[in-house]
Image 1 (cartoon, one colour):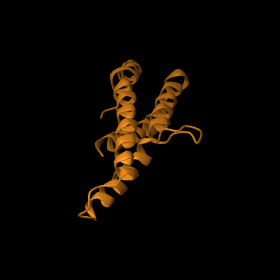
Image 2: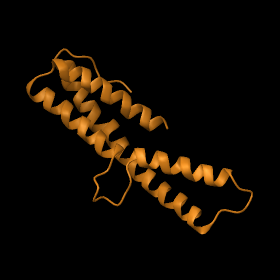
Image 3: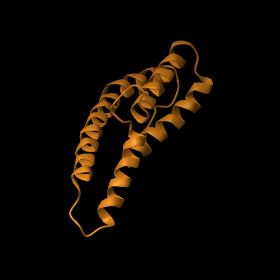
Image 4: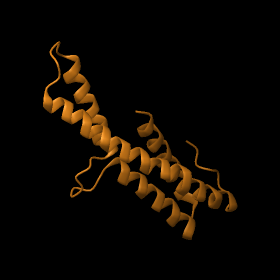
Length: 119
């Protein structure tokens, strides 16, 4: 899943940047890292799955559909539907980070002499 590769890449870049950053810049890096972590893994009380859980769900659903010549069960159809809804929500959150949070942080990084975080 491309989105999962992007979040992993950003985590690594934030980790590297956090080693040298201080003060508000370090706080901003930590905040973005936490935003991304919340998309990847939801809190236990949250009913919507995170990106990593969805990746597993889609894999399981694909295996179920691939292993039989029978039409999908209502449970499988419902699993696909709810996974698609959850994935759409995550994509919206991720796009918000890519269009708002990440560019704002990159501006601060450049002002402070650091490299931009790249996707």
